[in-house]
Length: 198
Image 1 (cartoon, rainbow, N blue to C red):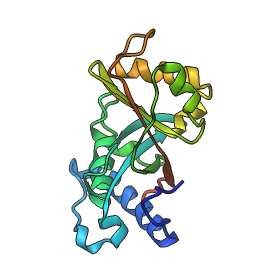
Image 2 (tube, one colour):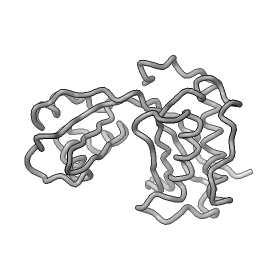
Image 3 (tube, rainbow, N blue to C red):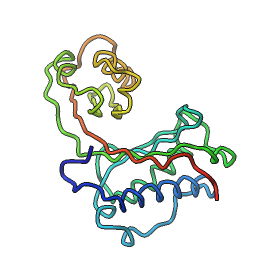
């Protein structure tokens, strides 16, 4: 689903994003650095501020996922740096090695601008969620966390979805913090497919 404040992504831009993501991951692993690039050489949509997550999977298992929730820099720059971080800096995994590149699944999720979800308590928020559609951010003084919409595939029940997100944020399993805030966003996902090394 496209962001409401951005024109639909063209087939050309989708192909450019897939290619840039692929090249960024390869360069990160081979050179231990983000891919050098000139934002001014990109299309207008890639030059505009944007936020994305880059996800790496191997044999159906998560291998790295890093992203940005809010747009603070050109999308092309955000994509390159998140691809580098997903490959080498995800604290849950060791850095991706070159012998893992062949057959690595790479995808990028382009985020819409987050929109607040008014909720007085956990039940209100559960009822407001759109399973399979919403990415969700929760935040309070206790911590902050997000789940991409793809997480609904593993947690289709809004109760379970929110419980696991609270756990990720470091919140207590019971109760709803008084200063809790929630926002939702949608994503447009672009898969590069399994990498085949040149």
